[in-house]
Image 1 (cartoon, rainbow, N blue to C red):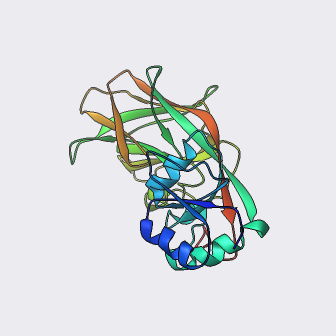
Image 2: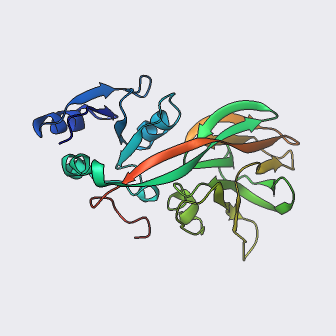
Length: 239
């Protein structure tokens, strides 16, 4: 183990396991992220908390999804002991704005979806320079590379490696037989509600952050970078 302390957020049992392996540990919470240079983040909520904190540590994601090449809880001691030789991946983070007001930050995905079951709405997606598509559907998800193997994949989107501000747009249950999916720059990407038929809720990394009314839009703006350690213990994002 390295002599420098490692922060742990998300699971006290993981902190105890590291201490038993001889590591110096600083425990934190999603509301108080340790200021250590390296942080073990257990779960997606912990990863997002670390990503949006003032500090900029090298992160070891644990059980936080294939998109970040997570390690398992059992593999954490070996992963931390190998951090000096880790490869660093950089993942984009995005601020989410609704009608110009910041409502949250996304490391994985942003989803707009009708609140009521079996109701659809109409959505338009656009970059800063081009119209991407307009469609009727239950909703739409905008996924970062970290989020591409998650819900976006389950609705037919591709899985891809980290890229500067690039992500996937995937309609959810679209009202068409052969729906498109798009790989575009997420920086400046917007989704707007085009019909006043149902209440549309907006989620950032699974947390409800706002509602979007007809004629309103949600926009993603690049806000930072998450540095992730890739180790021998890291899973593959593609399987």
